[in-house]
Image (tube, rainbow, N blue to C red; front, side):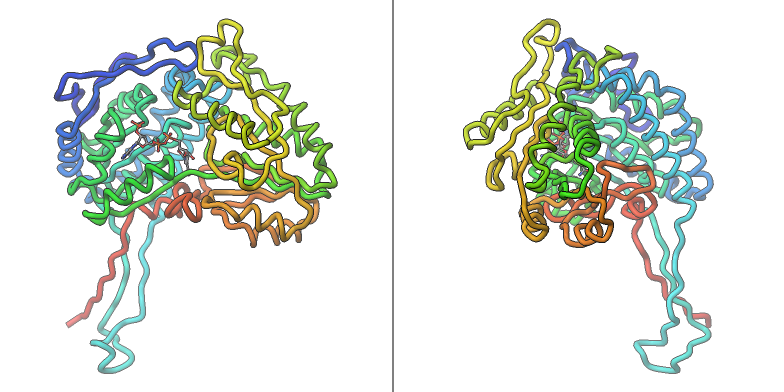
Length: 490
Ligand code: NAP
C-alpha cells in the first residue's frame, strides 16, 4: 500500500489519536496494511468536510457531475489490477473472482453516471386553493422534482468490498450528495485504495467523498447518531442494521438497509438433476459462501433427493481450496479468524442437533493452508426446519439439505424465516416457476437461476433482510428526495 492515510476534505490525514491498526491476509495471516484508527473527532471532520462540499456539488449541472463520476469509473478500470491485488490479499478473493468484481464495480459507476442523467420530475394536476375555485386552473402548475439529500454515511461489509463501495458511492455522488465512506475494518486497505484512486480524478472537489477507517462499534455508531448525516446506506448483518436503525432514530435519517439472508433454493422433481446440482454447488461455494445472495438451504423434492445430493456432493468435492493467488484455486479462505470460529460453531451446532455431515466440516491441516483461515466445503443432509443451520445465516461454505413432498409445504417452509432476501426455484414447468415466484416472500426470486445480477438490477430484501432497494436506476432513487412545488402565475 502506498498510502495508508484517511482521505478527508481532499487531504490525506492520520487519526487525531495517531493510533493505527493492521489488516491481514486471510490466506496466510500476514499483515497487508497499517491504517488509521479513527475516532469520533475524525468522523466529525469528515462529516464537516462533506457538509462544506455539499452546496456547490449539489448545484452543479447533472452533466458536470455525471462526467466526473464517469471519470471515476475510468480510473477504477485503469487501476483495477491494483484493486484486484488487494481484493486477493486483504479479502482472499480467488484470482478469477477479483477482476470480475472490479468489472462489475466499474459498470456500477458507469450506470450511476448515466442513470443520474435520466432522473426526471413529474407534472401533477393543477390545484386550485384547497379544492375551492374553478376545477380547471390554467394559471397554476404543480410539479415534483427530485433533489439530493445531503451528507450520506456509507457503511460497507467485508464480503465483496469493492463491489459494495462502488454500489454506494457512485449513485450517492452522481445524484448530488456528498459522503463519508466507512469500509469494513478488515478491508480498510481496500477502502483507502479507493480513496487513492478517486484522488486522481480530475475535478472531483475536495470533501465530496471522504473515507474514514476504524471500528463500526465506535465510528459507525458515531455516524449513525451524527446530526450532520442525512442518510445512511448500510450493508451488513441484520443485527448491526437494527442497531443502526435504533441509533439513527433520534435524528430521523433516510435509511437504506441491505441486511442478512437465509436463502432457499427449491428443486422440484422435474428439474434436470445433475446439471442443476452442479450449477448450485458452484454458486453455493463461490466466494466461500460469503455472498448475501447465495443459497444455503436446499429444499429438494423427495423423488430426486438422493440423486441430487449425490451429484451436489460430487461437484463440491471437485472444488479446489487453496491460496487465492494460486491459479488453480477455486475457493479461498474465509474472511478472518472470528468468521472461521463462527462457521465452526454452526457446523458443531448442526452435528449436535442431529444433521448428517456428508462432506467437509473441517479445516485443511496440511501446510501452507494451516496458516490461513480455511474451511472445507461442508454439506449436511437430514436437516430439519428448526435447526440453527436452517434458520440462521452462517455466511460461510456450509449448506444444508431438506426433503419435501408438496409445493404448498415447501413454500410454507421456505417462507418460515425472519429473512426474505432472495430465493430460487428450479423446474422445467414455467407456470409452476411463476407460481413459486408469486408465493415466495423474498426481494428477488430466480427461476432456474440463482445469483444472476447485473449493474442494472435493483437489489434489496423483504422482512429482516432490509429496507429499500440498491443498485440500478431504481436503487439510485434512494439518494434523491421528492419535492412538490405548487406554482400560481399571477
Ligand atoms: P457487519 O458486522 O454487520 O458489519 C458491516 C459494517 O458495519 C462494517 O463496516 C462494520 O464495521 C460496521 N459496523 C459494525 N458495528 C456497527 C455499529 N454498531 N454501527 C455502525 N456500523 C457498524 O457485517 P459483516 O460481517 O461485515 O458482513 C456480513 C453481513 O453482511 C452478512 O449478514 C451479509 O448477509 C450482509 N450482507 C448483506 C448484503 C445485502 O445486499 N443484503 C450484501 C452483502 C453482505 P467493522 O468492520 O469495523 O466491524
